[in-house]
Length: 379
Image 1: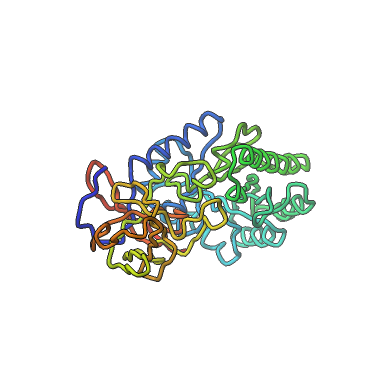
Image 2: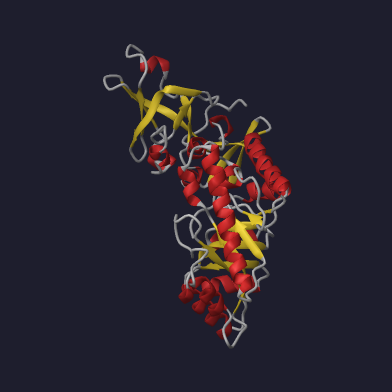
């Protein structure tokens, strides 16, 4: 799709048509597997985008901050999972949202956290809806499926006085899937994620605790799972845009990445073989997620204005407001002539979430025009 000229850069460019294809692909996959899909909206933090996900068939959303919960609740979305273990100081905020009509589910992963949450609910005559985080891959926090502490957490939620909390289920996130890059390894990780979370739910039920919801998901495992027996819902977030890390994992191609940063050439260092742009690490973020993959794209993959890769320009260095693109091709090229001052380039991001977080809006390619969709940041 053509891009209007004279756009002030750097800006966050979103290909709406490609994004919609990504949304439809994931929803079709979840429908085929027979599970509810609850997208993680921390990636976009944008009401226009989330409305498209819900219109495609998603039910409820996942958030990583209470600010996200608040902002999307204001948009009329009332079924929200806050998928980060909640700190005690945030319990009043969570309770306010619930009392305003949000069906907010919060997360715990320790006996201390469960006890604090139950006590808070009892003292304020409120019942928190709670899930226990399960660690199925050693990637971050959570309780191992077979750990004895799992039932201790459930008991802490069901205090003798009662009324402070209700155990809704278990959830896990196989974040280590981001380090894989073959279909076979991804399928194994998806099964490990599924089986571990289901096993935790079965242990809780066997001990007499309610466990209605079994929630799993990451973009790689959601797209690689072959069966999801025992799972009630799946979560994924970055699929909506995709990025270079996901391309390196193997769940998308570079052509399927819907997000890029549009920047302009502002100078040259012919002696060093550099093309300088106005898109530094403040535009791209410091995320160098492809460093551990088979191909390191530096701060991003350089494309021309139409999205065609320029393989000989490597985005190897960046300052706060300067991108330094290294020419790796023919040493006799005249860089100033090939990439004149003002030439606009598109940079595909390593990690869409962190790059998007550098901006307060999307410049959306839609119906042949550029439209602006606001996004928000912060906690």
